[in-house]
Length: 341
Image (cartoon, rainbow, N blue to C red; front, side, top):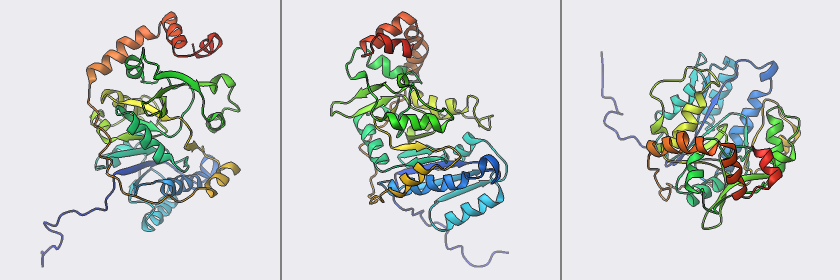
């Protein structure tokens, strides 16, 4: 039996102004062994992104089969206002499917998808926005440039700028940060040949972006996700899941995959090191100013262009002699060409 009137009936939804959402999929099945420090790493990630953002962004966290102890801690962070949306899945549905859960209701102009072990530093949002503004066709921008990304679903960039001096190999801006990334994924060091030069684009107003990026952290224009596969991913992690759901849609939407020239976020891994704690302590809280990002141009979807650049032009590009010629034209010397081939 129903008594009285539902006071929320026919009321308009009123939400705080926000044009940027951050989605963090999280999988911590226990708090021992490999995952012993995982939640502390996640907290550093969460607080760093909130502290250093320039706009009043909102955070969605999807707990993907995490243990009850972790879920209780997440609920506390939600109650304290650090997490705007908390989705708890009792079973592990996979990283990509966790992201899809949060994506379905996103209306923000920009969407950042990040692993829970990324340390954001000051100016990451500002510099990401600078790249979007300088390159209207940017569909995804990562605040972390890494080595050897120049041919990762970037054939549309190479095709467009093949004869332009805007696309050149330039000196790596922050070699130390690149070495730290290598160590975070288990490499003991990074040879000079990997952090010597990197493929870049330069805009009319002098802003430099790195060609290609990694999907462990990146900011997307919302229209990119109109090109998602209709079905859910069949993988918990890996396989072709991130390629199909976070990488390829950028190309299909007519967008460029880029990264900032300098480094504005660090991959931490599963263990906290002294440099991480020191970097976290030095973070400055940014003033939050609302921006609707209307100056960012919509991407014009072109699956025909994507097919041509990735399936035809890229095959021609990959011929060794042609690749050598292009790399030389783009600024590599003989020894560097050997390292890149």
